[in-house]
Length: 139
Image (cartoon, rainbow, N blue to C red):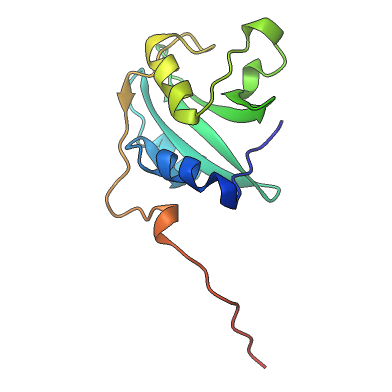
């Protein structure tokens, strides 16, 4: 699996993603499982795996099963991880927002569309609101 690396040059991409009501930032699978309660309900979240940030779509299908689909960056485009090695069937997008908009109108591999966004709560801090300064050393 190729994980996403958004560097300093990708700041506009970070801001675009963080501006979306359906993007929750870093949240665990356990945290979001109680938020997604109906078929087609979805959110995007970040997870830290082996020092890389991976973006995941958490969505409930028509059978009321919760799925967590990774989004990968391959050949300069964003796509679903489950489709990465599918060749022509793997549709790629310039941005994650374009990918989400596509799957609002077209079914995911789990046979559902993204229907209802689970919005980020106001108390959840966005990544762009956090900045780190120099490390403080204690002797």
